[in-house]
Length: 143
Ligand SMILES: [Cu+2]
Image 1 (tube, rainbow, N blue to C red):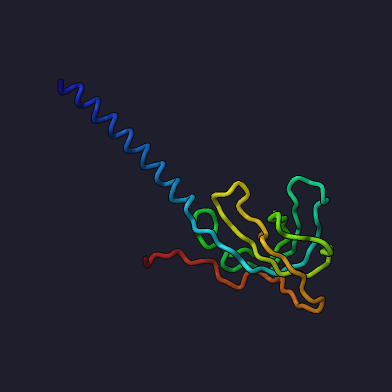
Image 2: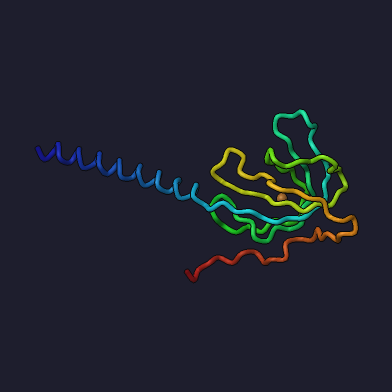
């Protein structure tokens, strides 16, 4: 009898460990949605007939970018492609245009980051493509 009990205990322990792992994943998926106000210069726009429209923008540094683990990882200025929400109208937007846009990030979505809003800036707008002004985030040892 005690042998059976031990087996049952081990099984329960295994289930508890697996459950623990699942819990960790759930926590990662629950990083809150966040939107960023970003400025940059349009470099390229995908053909209008592609399934997933994208726009390549040389964007300014994003000091408060939060990654999939919930860590703040400042992003330096760079040129990168962005997916677009269907509601964003790119009529009249061309490479070389200066724009401000809202990037909506939802790490639980199939496409985690999409531009939800985009508008042109006056040509005389001064953009800064310097590195992030924020120091590397210090390890938070003082929780
Ligand atoms: Cu980037």
